[in-house]
Image (cartoon, rainbow, N blue to C red; front, side):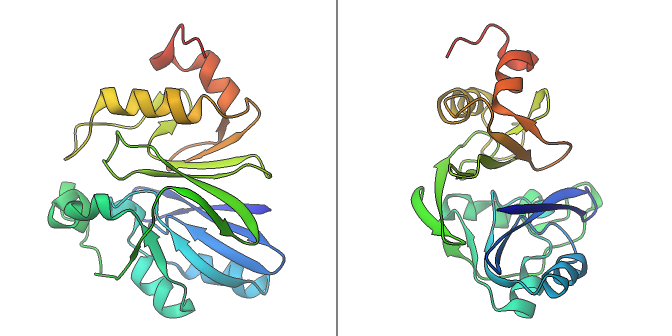
Length: 208
């Protein structure tokens, strides 16, 4: 699976184009999606799904335009739907622009198939109640949204956030993955399960 990262939108959110055998999924289109569409056209990729880790505005700004341009359905957790009634979800927080309304289908945690590959959709609440992680075990990639960053963690002071829940999600769902698993966060550089398990100051002394 090829993973191409783009920084989109006002908060430079990491958007990922994942491709395999001529098909693609786009994870967290957080801004105007022209750069995503350019990649899809240049590499002759058929987009099958738009996957959203959580319904914060900076991760979904491009959902409507990308869905309309490609016909790919948007999948997200309905547990986060209440956020669309708040400024952090619909936009307006810190003067950020409003989100163009879009339709999405509820994505439940469990085993799914994207790109012909097994994808384990993990429930990883804490940053938001409905935060999801997309883990491709055969490829060694985990897309965690704003749950975990390089040597840091996501903030929990927005509606529905919980530092205790976030910590439990990381310990039980992420740190139990193979150490070489590449972690793709919603902002900042990639990291790995092993690196964060041993060096993230928020989990000092963690014993798996």
